[in-house]
Image (cartoon, rainbow, N blue to C red; front, top):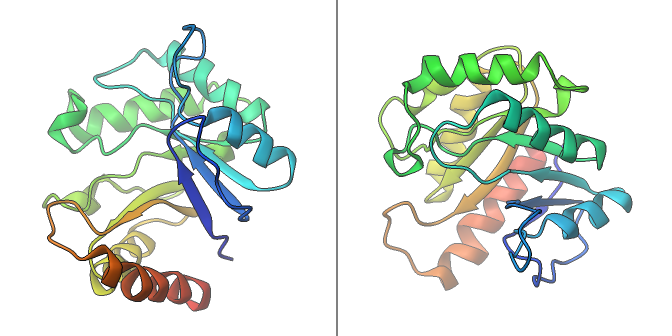
Length: 199
């Protein structure tokens, strides 16, 4: 089953009324901070939308912090994406795949609804990205580039995983040169249609 979603990154966004929404939450306790659209996700979930939130972090947070963030999202009706492209050097993750898998497993063992905890999407722009996928847990993935590249990412992820799969980011970038006016109505639209009809 496919539900088309919209990614929002700030509270001031005005997303269309789609069946799904993705947000990137930031520190909700700091006055004056933009919270990455978190509250838009909460409201969308109340109306029945599928909502995925990624608590923002770089480096290696504590298990306790991640559990608290995940519970905040789960209790509000959302799915929690645990991290973002931990195979990308810009994310500052230390310890590689093994450390991430141990971290995710520890968090999963302490949350109230493990089915709502999504294994972090690796960046498909780096060699060996599919080695960051595992069997038996729900996954988030990111898809970049042309229609063919995005299809290949989904197919590789479906081959290496067995749980539910959530595409939480789709864009033409990741180092590619592109014409957005061409990519949008062609590659993106065809990719969404393909996801709807994927056997």
